Image 1: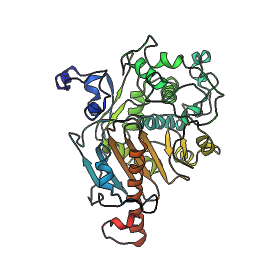
Image 2 (image 1 turned 90 degrees about the vertical axis):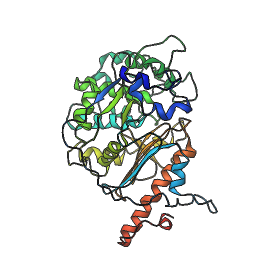
Image 3 (image 1 turned 90 degrees about the horizontal axis):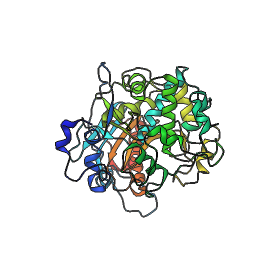
Image 4 (image 1 turned 45 degrees about the vertical axis):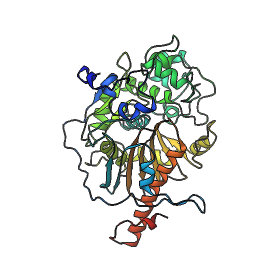
Length: 412
């Protein structure tokens, strides 16, 4: 936390109130002003250029879900889902880039669980380098886990959130695992005595089912994955992120990562970055692991394995104890696949954070938001449909070889 910014914190915003709906827009753009963070450096190389050819995408109409549905435009979706900023890139060119309120192109925004995709990318890069083996047991890197619920679990199971750990991601239950972890790391005030710090908290988790079963979304999996990455490499995550991802991405700005009371990173949802740099990150999954400036971040093999999933990834997703509202989808390497197949890949974070990658359309889109509720399908899926609609319009345009501007009718 930078004490020079303390005078700029709005009255009433503190550790107990920063997640209230009325404070989210400010707090999500000022995390380093009131909570401790570590820097993820962009390095010293030039920023990858993002050329612009701005077009009217707000008027593109979403494809109807049911017959007779009232037509909705992309602009309407963005205007009714607490959007802090959104942008859309096609073949590396920015077609629109919009900011609302006080957010600007240089504003770092809390990514929430989009942070997981960045940590998954670090793990992938370590696997590519032979430093980490995704088939190895966690105890191969941290023998002390033999006395915890994670004994017997593998790195692969963390990457795909398929351990058997007992952990609730119910954001509305103040006693759930995710809320108890927030107290342990100092993101919320304590409601009862408990462990202090990320790693002490992870050591308390117990196993409820056999490891390697169905998919269940649990933030603790990414925190454990980050710990394993640090143990395997003998480097802190901020350094790993700088060396393996952010420093190769051609980022314009440093990112920051929330840290606990001991300086340990909050891997599951604590990274802050600009919207433009997250668009650069999304490009990795269009360009077979290459950054926009041509540096290799992930191997083509890792990208292919991510897109293909395991033979039972979709069954494990379908059998999840929680309905993920994505029939035919899967979760792989800390990335979401909302549909059957590998055309669309997502990074998602609560309160409305999304990176959207549509491979056939050669599209990357980003939305930063401050939804009042952590999870809201009525805001999530219209956003997904809006990006789908623009991508579909661009595909129609490309297939017709027409240079004309995107027409709203093309999206249906």
